[in-house]
Image (tube, rainbow, N blue to C red):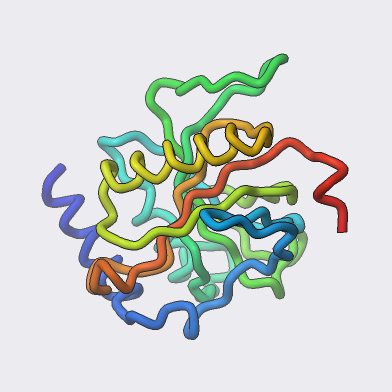
Length: 205
């Protein structure tokens, strides 16, 4: 397991080592609907992504990286985009509740905007799949620092509190968005937590 994690880290270092990643890679477009002191509300359109379900013992990163490196039906190299996102796999019920399915997580790479579900190369690995991420409104908090669960949880709780204080309904779990690699100095890193918010008339353009 340790060897696998080291190999995954090496791959991540190679492709995400630049400190100015946002200048090098495409990022999904969004409109800022409202800005608060601590966070902002964004509106995203539908986005195409390649996705894998994984557990803590089985990192999904290497499989997604192999897809963009050519492990697809066209043997096509797909340009890396940012951010890389991670979230808990949930079961949709009525009402919406959070449920971890056998400890499963989701990791996603967004595909360049030139691709659609019809023309994107299909993954050759059955665990990897193309998905359309439904657009919507997201509360987003930015933070720097190390890529640790402790740092993530601290800002996750902050975002929840901000939303509750502003009477904004949201859907758990949050999404972890990573824009920089481990070689980027902690204070220069751009990390984000995205929380989907319930549609409200006040967020209309």
